[in-house]
Length: 281
Image (cartoon, rainbow, N blue to C red; front, side, top):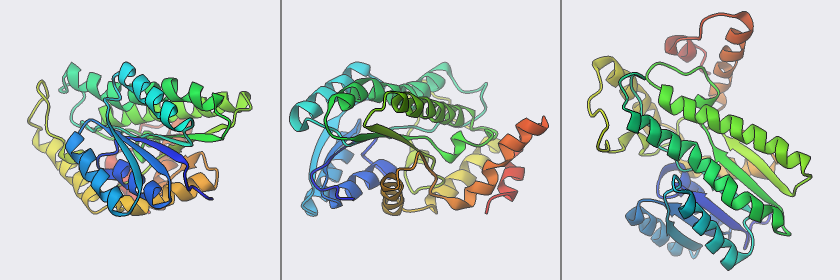
């Protein structure tokens, strides 16, 4: 597919998956609009894209603020007139025992991970439906959004499960409109990023218990040894070009995906983390 001079909007673009997508889209000749809250990292991304003669516009945007996302959409369409790929990618990860996490931690996770996607849909999709050219909405969920939630990951995995459900509904709604706008949902496994290195915010429970830290450390180590963001971005664009709704780039997780529906149908208890890991390919 020829992506030259097409427009990609990417939230959470300052690091990890978002930065990888921004660089890959720029290398493909797209005009990239990179949005995030961390201006310093956005400026570093801007330098990297300019170094490869790519086209990029950075925007400091909090996706949890609907007015900010609406301004972004208005500015992008005023400049380019169309958006061909909208990556609702921004997200945070807060783990730990569900009853020990503060209300602010739950609230912030849902405002960014879930309502950030909703805000992107509400501000961009009406404009994308009105543009002449086809477009695609790509929402970043997680393999965790498809699995039974494991201990200490209730906040994060529940937000990602919500993103999956929102994406499935959006796919059906747009299909019923016979719209030139399609949908994909990204369900990555471990991709190298700093999502596990997020500084604790005021109001967070700064300390995790020994058991919580053991799981945190195990998953953080898996992320550190995960797929590179550049390779992940390459696979994502391949999935988009193949018109896939489900973009699951880590085949080793597919055996695990069968455990939850099997448990539901059989009426058994949710699989434990240990049981799930035993089914990882």
